[in-house]
Length: 99
Ligand code: HEC
Image 1 (tube, protein in one colour):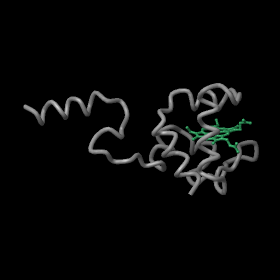
Image 2: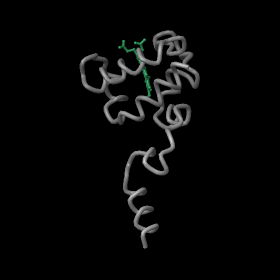
Image 3: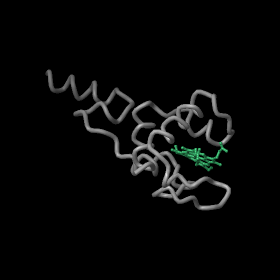
């Protein structure tokens, strides 16, 4: 019963991290969240009007995503993209693109 309970708990947690303490895969996340459509799979933008993310520091990217999410940095596209990101998702995405 204990095991069943913890599985149920695991499934009820929206964040993917919770189960077994595995960290999120930023590359997979970038595809799931649609970031790759504009920033590419490894941070090389698809068109010049979208910024390249590769070559940036992990810390910089992380702080930008938090700023977009919290509305401190204003951009209609990125505010929408970042609005639903959890802290751990931001960490994983910044680590992926910042590496
Ligand atoms: C529809 C295209 C589009 C999508 C999808 C998109 N972005 Fe962006 N992104 C942009 C544009 C345009 C900017 C520049 C916005 C600005 O001027 O502030 C930007 C800026 C950024 C920046 C700041 C870069 C810098 O140099 O300061 C980060 C970090 C970023 N995006 C990450 C992401 C992540 C992570 C996702 C997925 C959750 C994502 N983006 C999805 C278009 C997009």
